Length: 247
Length: 188
Image (cartoon, rainbow over all chains, first blue to last red; front, side, top):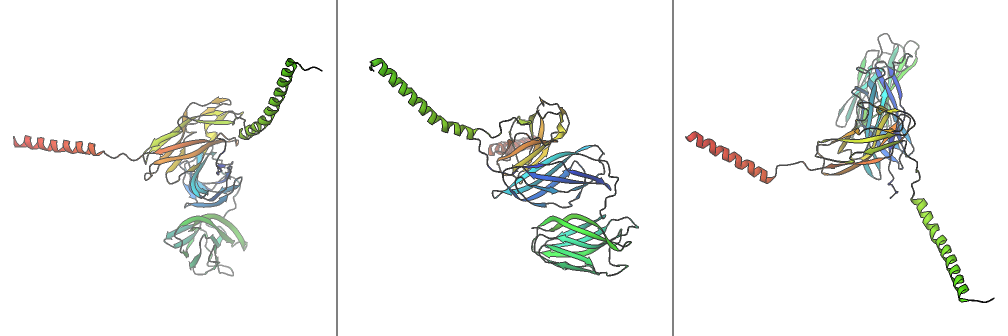
């Protein structure tokens, strides 16, 4: 009568909050305080009241395995438009996990208070990647969202991929390095100033494409890296997640 | 030393009592050990207690069910309802979708008090769910990482109601009757 079946149990810890540039970034620790490992954890829904989610753009978001007494984390971003500083908003994360060969659902909740916008400069590159997905084909476009006059020009896209794939699109003036299994690394091939193929502030570049036999998508990490044309050295980075072939 | 009937009796009683005491010791040790194993490891009260009003609700596919309950705060500090976070595990993600309602509206829950019966969370049953019984576990976590007991809730998905053959027949008869009456009225 006191014996309980071993099972994962999810909870959260106090999240890190950053209100900057009209976006709230939440670093939410996800804890397994149960008595069994949770494998293949995937987040299928993230919401913060009625705020618009800006990242991840697509779900599911694979989290991986969360062993018992283990912790993982997710970092969604929301637009702060319509939210009030000091207001309480319910953050909900729902998903699935596997334990004892059964897929089950979990949901964790936490009210968070919107902090005042950060006054300190946040040294992240303002940029994002958009993807169009057709069966077996993922096509990416990079957007440099830096303000006019910024010295941050995008020169590199590093993308994590969950399944074996083939690179089928490389924009002019760029080259790619890949292991065809887990990552693709597109780099502007310019060797010297004025680096004509770097993506300028306010500009965009499409044509980054991969194909895979896997038809399912998951949000997986990518990093955009800029080259600082003023100091002529590596610039800011923009890490985020975007749909790519699922694991 | 003489041995009388009385002393013999006393001797027998004494021996029997010693045997009884020994046997009690022999029997009681495993019982005591078993009791120690059976008693829950943690016997202290949870700082937050979750008590459901109705741990089991029924609904057809597509239904929205609201689970209610009471919360007792023994954390040592006053809490707002929005300081309490519901965590769910073990549900069928193809059938159940859950939304926390606790905290909206907000209310104060002083230390060593219990709330009135309040809405805890709602469950939406997927429109294509198969009839059956679906259970899941819920516990509360507060702002200061205090946890409540875990409570198992159950959603009983009933089949969608379809008109019975008898009802259909009745409806059909009514329609035919109405048609006949209409014709008769026209022929006059």
